[in-house]
Image (cartoon, rainbow, N blue to C red):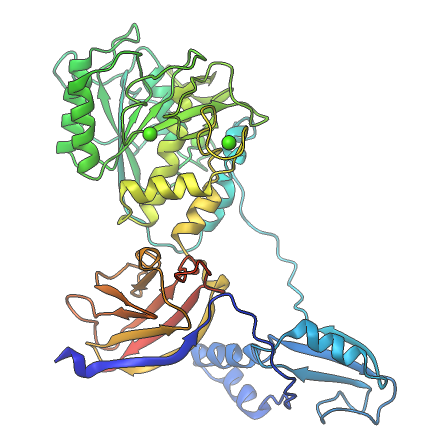
Length: 516
Ligand SMILES: [Ca+2]
Ligand SMILES: [Ca+2]
Ligand SMILES: [Ca+2]
């Protein structure tokens, strides 16, 4: 019976409450013998673990300088000097203790034992020669996201259907970027070679190969993101609704993650709307341009329900003169001077909400790539709640919820290990373990989903049932149980909130190892 293994983690997680404790001065001692043995040991993992334990004891220390050498609080001073290290417990209020010590007449100075850093230059560089013309990447914080993705984060393959004029399959920037099952809905064959250019322009923004010493950098960096070119637009740049419907149906059958529609018209179609809702219900994220007429009217497909309607901003983050505005606009990203791939293996500056759409498709692909379980609604919530408000306060007809901030969005999806408070590693954990985490306030159930999870050694999220019960989070083992001898990490993100709206202070990580 699983219930027998129901063990409560004693540590109580604290929401954002200040707890001021008294000063508990402790000796800081480093067991040098252990340190030296380990350093010479062939087992570097042991060494690193021990080093981490030692470093942890230094996280919250103060350096105190006395006016003379005889007045130390404890014996932890340097060679009879008048300097002493004071170790504080991690829940002590360091600032108030500093103030207290500064009032001590024997003490000359008090300062935090701050860290210095080795002066290593970050090796992150982008070598695509036209990268410096791609202002739109910086504008929505894409390079910072690439740096984050540079770590050994496990990602998932993503397919984006681009319903457009096709793609120049031979362009130097699209090697291994095109899904082989593209289709031409005008000719009813697989000839998706782009003669017009628009589909090639749009596709390059999303996934031109980054860091290949050629051309531009695509938004999705070198994640496994492929374009499924669905040609429904003719060479004069027009599309029949019926061909768009066929293309969406095809995209649903191919199980794509995202549908990019850099197309639009003012008239509403019941059948097109129904087909789009079918795609949305299958978990596909549908993105479309708000329109390029600069008028206050709907533009479809962007203005259908459950479609992400994307407006355009310029280099000063002001709304583009051509960007349609209405209550269906959800977010804005750059849509002017978008340097991208063009036909004849070339590059060109382009503008329009078409390219804003492509940028958002790329951003969504990044989010889905690091967290494939995200639903359309979750993606929508992440993009809109992390956007930077512009124009009138709050959501408005021009900017929707504001300018996409991809870094904030990705930080909402993944937790950076070095931002986490680390709980002690649990060894010899049984393989049908049920974890129960108790918090100090009633938990808002709706904030738990996606914010509590367990990753395996490959950083793959396990499928498991996670329940909330008043002030407890209960995590059942994955359907196939854990694997003996393997290490797992439990993450609790600080997006969790209490019923009265307090947020968890730090994200938490706890490693546990299943016993053999
Ligand atoms: Ca390139
Ligand atoms: Ca919408
Ligand atoms: Ca606003």
